[in-house]
Image: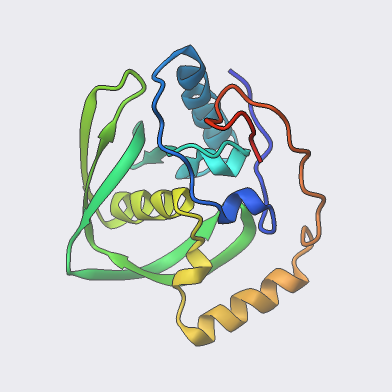
Length: 181
């Protein structure tokens, strides 16, 4: 296990749709452990593989004392909505009121390829939606209304970390195309 650097806004991997996991092997289990350790160290409520430069459909979560991961998620969302502050480890120090579904049923797999169903509401639902968005190349600021998005983009331009160098691209056993951005 190793704590990995978290990719920041501007890194292309954050805007790229992640590939489905097809190999449930030792490398995948290492990725899940790295994600978990990095998320807990940050600390964060969730972390998606693209946020550490691995373009695979995997995320971890730690909400209300529940620690877990989900691979290849598909979501069923409630019609009932919730509003609340949302932030992101890839946009440090930023939080904006973001509308999400109140409840989610997420189906996917665990690190061994076994089917998993995760049901949650409120914060867990928000986290699952946020992390699944990362797997689709969507950031929470994309979900903001026009006025909030303008404020977010201004804050991004003024952020102390803005313009930080993008980590180097390297070969990765986790990437299905042999390249982790």
